[in-house]
Length: 315
Image (cartoon, rainbow, N blue to C red; front, top):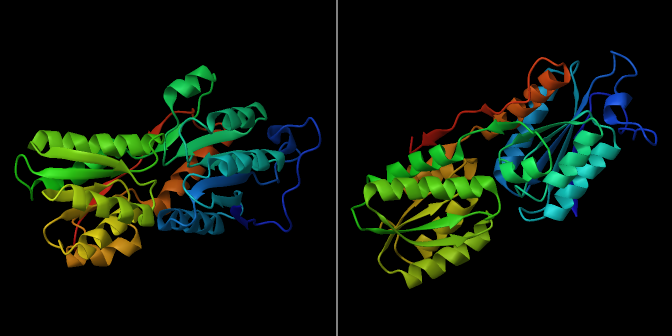
């Protein structure tokens, strides 16, 4: 049920700490022991997270003397139970830090609280954990990632320039309980509101291409006046673009996305996708890993760090 890849500079698999010991205690055997950092991501079926994993592996290969890396991902975007299990597995294996892109902004908090209680440094990337849930749990977890709302608003502004006041658009959102899904929807809505463009529908497509294709096809039938589909990630944008072509409305209904995965670049050049946002997925995990290492060395306070996000259009 779980896709897992390990990248370890030392030989063999990690050894769980003895009963009653914490990850911090297991790392105190000597200064020569490199800290083990676990990268826990969402679906490795999503090209964005594959890119994130590759960036992390390349960073570790260039810094082998500094840390060991374990890379994990779940099978699909909604496999929250398995992501919780991965966090618990990493704690049992005695890692010193977990860098996590949570599939859900609330459901992962209890497992991460247990990780911190075992002395594990936790850094949140990509999808921000819910602040109220963290507060209720008495948990402080730094977020290292982009301003998703600002990024989506900037992408929305690109499409707004091609539309007129009163035109109808639809928004495809990801998992509704994910903070980044909520923020991207809000950013799209900000841009449409400012331009006087009507949001005719908001539909969830779970971040998935096939689901987005089905939902977009239905939206195109139900809203014959639809002028654009704003997808909250590129996988959904690919599904929406395919639905537009299948409906014979190519050139009449615009599509935008978010993530700048390789699969959208040809569609950008062809005009089938108008714009996307690049949150530099190959570096996002690296930012989190580097911050986790600084926290382990007591060189930084656990504070949020904002990372870049840029609008990408046709070359």
